Image (cartoon, rainbow, N blue to C red; front, top):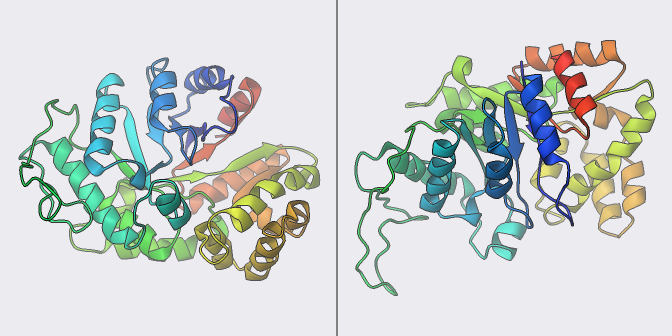
Length: 343
């Protein structure tokens, strides 16, 4: 079991403690530091900024939104950071949702699985640098031609020779088809809400991908880097109450009322009625009430909260379920040291 530090994306203001946290994680033996993006700060700039102070940890995006960059622009950013870090980059990708893709980026959302497959193929063409990059489309045609173009586009190779042709690609996938796609074409899976209780269901999805012709990895070489909130405490109820507003936001406030991929994760865990109640309250601007209807067992399904012995026992359960890395948030150097001692 490895540990990853999740710095996430920024809120209203830039954080002031990330340099300290990254240094502590490097010293404590964390495997990877991750950054994310939503519709504010981007993922690559902080990762490069703080990553320059590291020498050992891998530098990962968890996740960048595909619609924010064309495949070749993403490949350029990845090969650049991979060079600067001496081959320590992990590219975590996610399709996001239609509200962000069409409302923020002005791109089309439909066909996310086909878009992902095409996107990753172009990335790997760039990094392989075996021939000029081409794509028949239909989502990312290269070179672009037809009505409204000059017709002068030509296939190109990257000027810069990539340090590695096999920069790891991980997918932030939540649904069964997307998880199976991750197992087929990617090097790892980045689940945001993971529950060892239903690992059998996840494994069915993953096995479908591993069994496909041309699958890139096997279960033995595939990484599952699961987001995990870990809190050592003797006051479980208090900590769980603190976590519920965050869960209410993702369950009831992300996406639209009928298209929220995070909410679907909890439906698959068996909490459909809770999701319905939280969504109704959250979207009626009754956010405090929305958090209060979330039961403790739902929190317990995808977080680890309890005394030292309980936390150690649960970490073993996550590892036994197939997780290879627990991606954790931390607010202090002391917490990072504590987490490192647990794994």
